[in-house]
Length: 425
Image 1 (cartoon, rainbow, N blue to C red):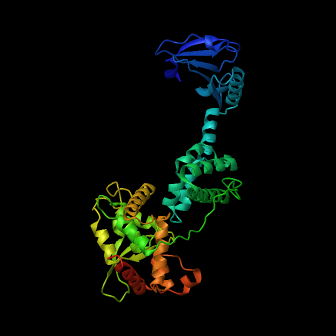
Image 2: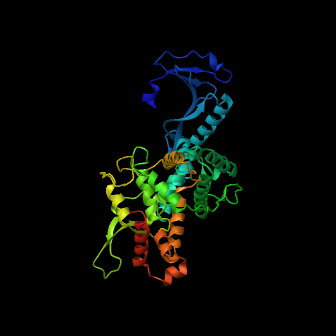
Image 3: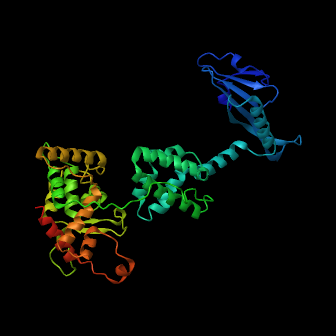
């Protein structure tokens, strides 16, 4: 306080009815502090820019008693009350309250810090971090939760106590997501927010869940689009590396989707270390090429192994060799490929141009996930048993089957992948 006070020119005046706009501003580099004569602890600080701030200076009485019989007081403490948007009467009232607490041995500034720290611990951003660390990470969903709960749309909630978030706030956020990201993104965002609020209620961090029974129009609708072999072939051809083809990273990524039937994230986020040579049976001496998706990266949270046909091996062998781990990347392997929507839009343009040149009908609307459904359908039409196809896709088996049937059908599943891959060799 002493060194700080030396920076200011001090004045005394009655501020109750003073015209603050008429106060002469200090010169550039100077500062002015006015002490209110009708409330000794109330101060007004004036900057050369014209900015004015109310504060209160007080001394906290301690437990010891001086020779005079009065309680001793500590060093001066300053607490900022706000700008002059706060009216004089309100500033004076708060200053008197704080000074009264100080006379009773209560340091308002320290008390305010503790309250602020408590609020900070319950803020939206703090509880999102805690939710990710304590819940999502344990469930193997850390990356997914971080991706959705760290979206820019949620930054408008930062600084608020999670208990202050109302249904109207959630509707506004989801409306914004709908405009900027689409219906599917709204569904995903709502799902992750619901888990966050449910987790907070269960731990008694908030009293109620504002997202429960939220009335929204966005609902999941199961797609039924199945691409024919001719359509899959047109996509495959458009994904080459020529001038009029998609090229790396999306070209080989889409071809791997066709060859393996895996989810987009499992291919797009593939790491070099996932490629393994594995035995189909413990007694086997021979190993076969495969990809082992770790539990944290697979929807089932149990991990998944899928086998590589010769065309799939050839694609992975042809990829650029980066120092960092990701195989499909535009950042030298540091991060997985991103910008899926732009890659898909470019592929659609190539397909449309080729259809126009060949004078054939363009492809109807399709999504990357339609490839997965189409691979499963085509395998079924080839006579591959449904149970083997489920293993190819990495679907979770129902609990009863998972508990009692430990057969992974590894040989049969690999044979299915080889048969399917042979069509693309």
